[in-house]
Amino acid sequence: MSTFLGVSLIIIAVYFLHKKGIIKNAKFPIIRFAYRSIPTKNKLTVSYKLYNGMEKHPFKIKKGEDTTLNYNVSVQSGSLILKFINDTYVVFEEEFTSDQQGSFSFTPSSRIQIITVIGNFTKGGCDVEIID
Image 1: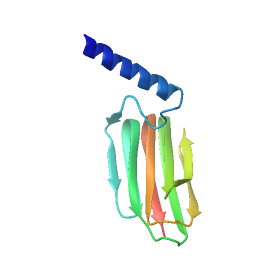
Image 2: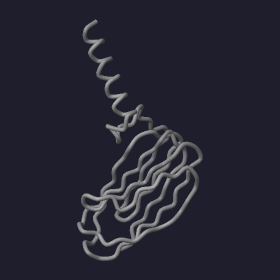
Image 3: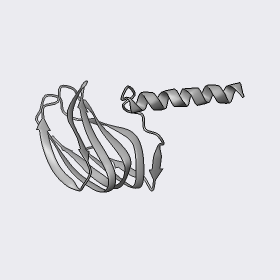
């Protein structure tokens, strides 16, 4: 009984911290129904029927050279957040609630870049391509 009470209190505390925004990257519950992720050297393709969670995908690119990132997002329900991190700062972050495509350019300060895909009970997919 005391174990159940302890676990319940921890779950309640984490839930309230998440709702207040103190824990920002926690996703409850993590759902990956018909989830498929295909990372290649310069491209990431993700598709899913239902996705609630967060995935990080590292990429190696040339440091100090202009780089363009093209994205094509399909959202049939829910929302999808794409976040692109260069070294320690966020270069691009956008939440999508409908189909959208676009691109942005930047000059990387390090070789390792991270694309974070965050699903909020979403259905659809995305393609992200890095052109250096």
